[in-house]
Length: 322
Ligand SMILES: NC(=O)c1ccc[n+]([C@@H]2O[C@H](COP(=O)([O-])OP(=O)(O)OC[C@H]3O[C@@H](n4cnc5c(N)ncnc54)[C@H](OP(=O)(O)O)[C@@H]3O)[C@@H](O)[C@H]2O)c1
Image (cartoon, rainbow, N blue to C red):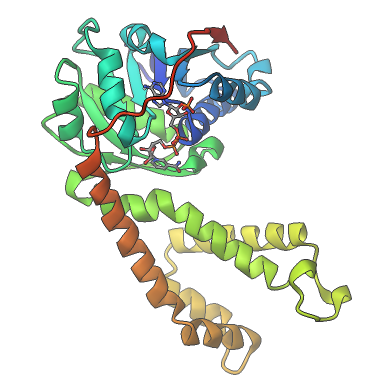
């Protein structure tokens, strides 16, 4: 792999291209299209188990492939895992933790290459566990937690600083640049990865519910007998609320603290204060704290079951280029 000013990844593979793998694939293609000089990927190969998922991947990326700046994408079946991994410079594992055993089986006997980087996207699975399961892997191993916002270049990707397994600066830089092309990157000690993934990846589902709830509160379908003329179509309400959430995030990412922002928006006796009283009465902040803590605990618990049970869906061996 040539590491010049633009980082070059001749061959990138994603083994397991479901919800997260597809989001990453889309994000990498969009990045290649929008910022062609930054990260250069010559070829992308992804594998899935079922023909249905292969078709979904094909449909999702086909509009992006019209751009000549994007690299070609090969969508292959699970029985190609070993070949695909052997030909790649970077191999991303996009399966669920419960498929680790099956994946290890697929990759048995692969040719060694101490420069080939393995990046696990599996929730809750530490680099140590990956190294133990894939004992034949001789290259660097990194654990990454990203969110489906990679598809729009807005993920926070958490990378585990597990020195035993990623001990060279060159592979760290390669991994950092790859994920920087689809968002923001933060290296963290492995012991903090479970808790960080609750707020960095799972939280998108929580924010989505909050935005939906706020929007529904003023939308026509949910008006509770209020004057319909004053209500918004749900789609408009969602767009307005999502933009407001984006503004909130941008302010918090600068220097504003959450408490300062609340104080800037709410005046005593005003309309925002009336809404805040409802949140206080319903203990929203406390509920969110519990939500994050339980999610982090559940992520940590995943590591205990990783690799202990494979999934047994059958594979068809069709090969296709998107
Ligand atoms: N989704 C998120 O927002 C998110 C965020 C952070 C972390 N994660 C982690 O990312 C991992 C994947 O999550 P996901 O939501 O993307 O799950 P998913 O949608 O179920 O994707 C998993 C994919 O792996 C494929 N697969 C399973 N075994 C395979 C094998 N041996 N070879 C090739 N492909 C195989 C499946 O193919 P078929 O569809 O054909 O069965 C499926 O498409 C999980 O560990 C999760 O914790 C997810």
